[in-house]
Image (tube, rainbow, N blue to C red; front, side, top):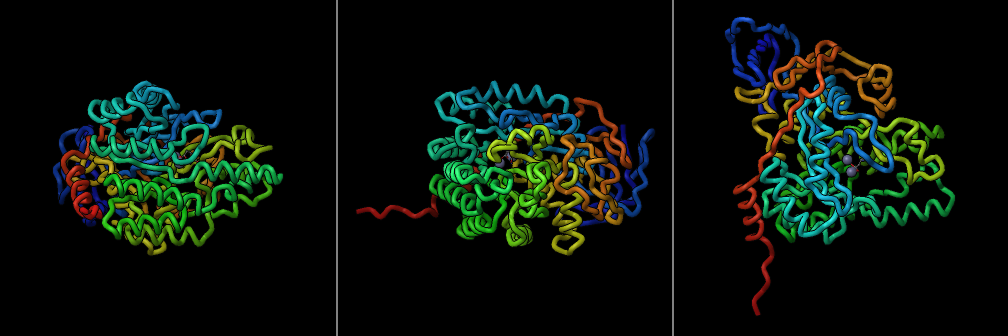
Length: 479
Ligand code: URP
Ligand code: ZN
Ligand code: ZN
């Protein structure tokens, strides 16, 4: 199948231009003025629309078994919801149980993801350490196209990685040319604060943010940065939610450390007042970690994006329905942690970022797609509209409005943290791997159309950067 998109303004991270786009099969064949349409090519009239690289969400959890239940969205419904909002690729997480083989877990997740309708890859979590883990990390990198490993510094008694695991795994990731990533919260402190709050009889969702204050996140971010500094590894910190963690990243970058920060659409838009709502379902629906923060932190996060200290935007899409959240009715620490967002990330960030003048359209592309593709080694296959790239394109109507509602959403779970928000900026068409997957409100997808995307190791460049950092690290003074 081929398509000629005519009349749109093509917006990439580096520039915008009025140009036609020719899609042949799953690739972009040409971008330019007055392209010839091959026989049988369908012409898409897109005057007045922006053509941007499809969004890449580097942080989702589809069909995740977590806190005694499984997320409401599976790889079909979750990726379909993403396509309806202009997101054409995800990087999800394989999370082995402690003592479980990484490869066994990887193959389990690959099986679950076969029904995806958008392209997908995986970060693999390191939840324990052994020689087997060390060997399997290599196999994942060299045989299965995994180039990032995740470490949960929170979730004690479940999947938490302690300092030994961080040190061993970061070291191994560097040898393999892979990128270590962390969920930065001090799990010991969270556990201790949870117990103290419960003892005081504070058992409702209002206790959730009290058990995970910004300093708990800042401590872990600073610790991970320090470990990465000593070991000369790069580091990617997921869902940065507070000013103090952001400052740690800015400081490290200022000192020449290669640290990347991710921010969630939810943390940019929703504030912590939601936890004080007396309606349990509403407050529990917002329980995720790190929690939503005060407006002061939100402003800092926007500034971090503008300043280039935060690089990617994600959702941490991890949906649970009210019945699942009710598991924590008597004890907030048992409320399954997670919220949705994949369907609305592009729209809410456009609306609150571009419409307010905080971001240019090119910067929007950078933080919703191109930076992610570059950091995780998907570029220029993804993250850019250019000949040879995957035909992952969203045709965006910057003037159209839409009111976000659970009644009209594709995502499951029956809850939306952006409920009732009217946004200006709407995905009208989404092309995913050359397929016209979303057209004027209608999904046109079949299970299994999404493809597993391999992400090569960083290789020589990565090692050279590490060596450069080592050369400039403080040296011991010989006696
Ligand atoms: O609350 C969250 N974020 N749930 C998903 C797991 C994680 O921490 O990313
Ligand atoms: Zn997390
Ligand atoms: Zn997550």
